[in-house]
Amino acid sequence: MSEIVVKDFLEAGIHYGHRTSRWNPKMRPYIYGRRNLIHIIDIKETIRGLLRAKKYLQKVAAQGSLVLFCGTKKQAAETIRDCATSVNMPYVDYRWLGGIFTNFRTMRTRMKRLEELDQIFSSGDINTYSKKMQSKLLREHRKMLRNVNGLRLMNRLPEAIIVVDPKKEHNVVHEAHLEGIKVIALLDTDCNPDDVDLPIPGNDDSIRSIQLVLKHLTAAVAEGRNMVPKEEVEQPLEEQYKARPSIQS
Image 1 (spheres, rainbow, N blue to C red):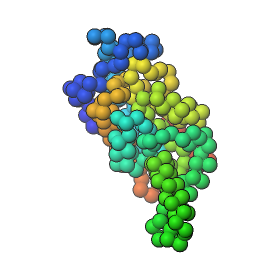
Image 2: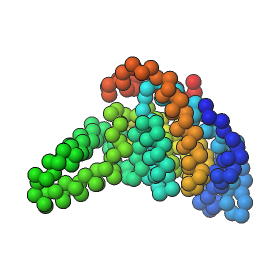
Image 3: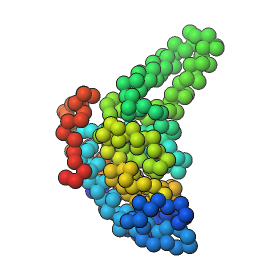
Image 4: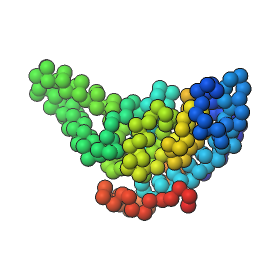
């Protein structure tokens, strides 16, 4: 796995939490102290959480399972998109549509609709429609690209999801729990660590902090994918829950 350099994390400001007035008491074990009314996150806990997450993600990817990247806040969106794309994994970088996990079959029909629209525009068939219908189809296509373009590769439910700021993405976390999907999250001092399976305490507002953590998590996914035999066939939807890797193992 890629080497973790503590100096890089300190320079990225990953240890800076929120103001002490905004903290969640359940984050106490991950807090080193306070300075100028700001909580300071224990960097040792950050590294420990990151190492556990990397080990688990490598195991998940090595089994050929999917990992969904999710971060819709402005500071995280571009990094989420770039990291997920680099390892051919699905992502959500703009808005979480309710039911992506809990109503997955319906979501797949929306993806088929996006493919139909792609075909209409790429083949030139759009020119056979009236101006009004062209305008309508164009708006629909733009909206779907914005909302679900990153989910094209999600032909089945993921094994795990990487989340930036689980407090903001509470709907994502809730759906993941309902479907038994493991949640790995970069979370600040205002979050509840009990909501995630593998917490990585750290600044979830700093672009540099987010980029650094996601770089390491993405590297773990990439290493795991390199272990998957090329001839391996993906499991069908109804078999995806079998042989799930354990976080503790």
